[in-house]
Image 1 (spheres, rainbow, N blue to C red):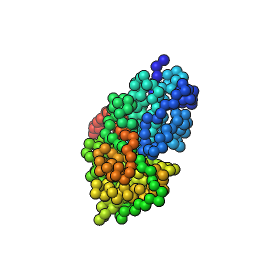
Image 2: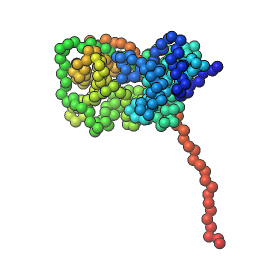
Image 3: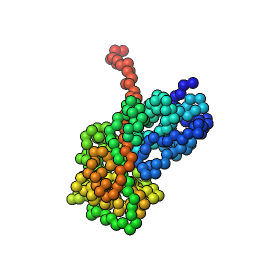
Image 4: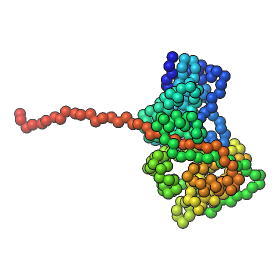
Length: 310
């Protein structure tokens, strides 16, 4: 009996809980799970699909008889124009076609919903990365996770000019992104303001700050807390990175552990994090695939000729 990818049905419960005693990890990593490593269980994901009106998640499963072969789920990012894969389970280690079928299903569904792109973050160098590349996902950015334990009583100062982000700052931040991110990154991730807005990730319960000097936004700091874990990411001009990192540490000082993501093109940020005691951890690759939109062909209508003849 062959396997195929399709949406989850209530009758799939048997396959979801019968994994031959094995636990298959979620290979998709999202920014709001950095530092926790919690993976949505397949059964939990299936229930969320049935109540998708509340969760906004879309899920597909691949089964062969009563056996689970794979599962994928996705959610929107900053807007409906971009989706990200938040759960990817590959139980068919002997058949890469299952994984590719799941990736095709989520991309096709994203296109039908109006999304322009699908994003996927994986551990760098994994088999799944190679399979996704064969499925038209382009690896465009590599990231390193940095981890640091916060010492009790440690003091950090908030830099002058760091304030809460306002709605009017958004286009200025897009301009900052264009100035800092290399062209090859922007060509895949976001070339327009709409694409950039849609591609924004969530760190969890996130607070946004901007560093403004002389009326110009020069840095963007995002901070989120999750129990004892604090996360932050930074986008900024190189001469203000020290201040942004200092501000981030001040904002997560009440968490026992701080995590940060540094893109491979931002060597100054990675270097500064290591100088402040951050240890390099997992390395990830971010991939993106454009969707295909179905465009209706114009319908030809016979011309009606009017004459003045009776």
